Length: 505
Ligand SMILES: Nc1nc2c(c(=O)[nH]1)N[C@H]1C(S)=C(S)[C@@H](COP(=O)(O)O)O[C@H]1N2
Ligand SMILES: [Mo]
Image (cartoon, rainbow, N blue to C red; front, side, top):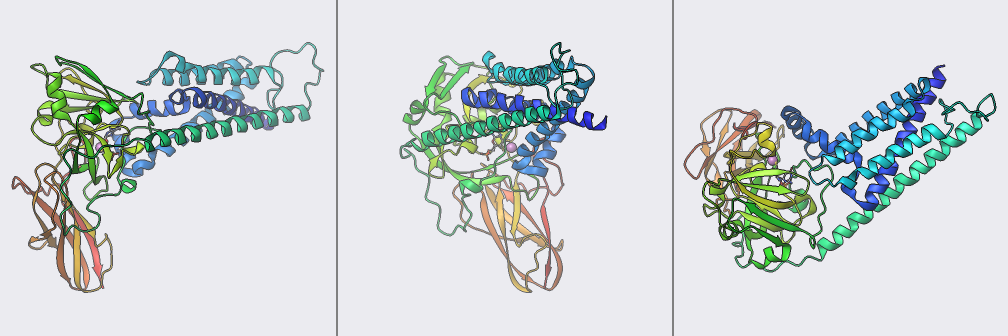
């Protein structure tokens, strides 16, 4: 009895695996965004409440995605096993199980922002494969799909059941491997077309990085933090990429990549930071960006009176709202096409992303952007605003101790305490360090590129033996001192002084 129940659960699992493999193979071969597993994951990501999202970013950083997909696969496996057991009792479940799970897949795929009606096909095909196997093929635990008039009274033998199960498992593995091969081919194609992009020299080059900056002033692209909701990195095709600028404008336009690049590019060192960054956290980096200035583009389109928000939309449906006044106030807001001397990395928004110095990423830095809509804050709430994050989000002044590391054990004597401080577009006027809660002492500021770029600082400490706490605070270009009060990132950025403990030997 128990053995048969287990066998039925296993058969349910097997049929589900076969269905998913078929769906993934079909989607990867025809239209990758129609793959149901990732679409279900994306739906979960979009539907998860803010505290869960915050916790996931905090806990897993960028590694939350494989975990989420694994969780969804596990949930699917459990449901499939249960459906298998139910199907043992009631043959209707041989149809109902695949129908229910298939419907979840179809629903997820069709409600994605970039969905087309035909995207339902892979999930449907998967459900048909699973139901077909359960209903047609004698498999362990549920040997006969329907009262068999001709079958031998004892039913199929163990050998036949096992052979069938093995064949299905083999077919599933093959389909899965095929999908993997196709996926890698798609990725390689995309990499080739990105490598073929040639970016012109900037009409307005970045100032040379001043002499005297320390290593790490610019963050290598491979080490640049990544925060987004995309479960698979969008790999857009630069030739078919279009940017639609519309809404409350006199002259809507549609631009190709070449149109954008032909407008003349600026190159700037700009620090980008994430609103989810905790005090002392890693979600901040500085890169040399190359892009088309946004303000002239908006002015050419003719912004209508009353418009106050620019909503950027990406290929996978992210929406990011930026105050138009900020974009027009003279800062180097741009549609970036290059990062650190190369076309954007896929992870960072290839072929085009927005960048607004002085605003957190979720409020000014849409990656994989395909649409800019001029509208009002009253008329539209962008993605994270719907989850309670602030509508307008200038970065808060922040400072971080990078050396020594927390809980380091430096030798007594001269110790260099060093780190970075940032208050993009206001700039950093001063950084101070306090040892063991004592008086604030000024740190030395290294040169920087502009007020949009972080500042490296260092402080020469004569460290006496024993346990010590080190804390840092910055003063921005307006003279405002970074507040001491500890606040979490939600809803408009963390505040508080970064403090670490060390033990001097
Ligand atoms: N399309 C898209 N753009 C996006 C996001 C996203 O989830 N999707 N996340 C934003 C957030 S919250 C941040 S902090 C920055 C991060 O940019 P990076 O990954 O290149 O560092 O991208 C912004 N742009
Ligand atoms: Mo962010």
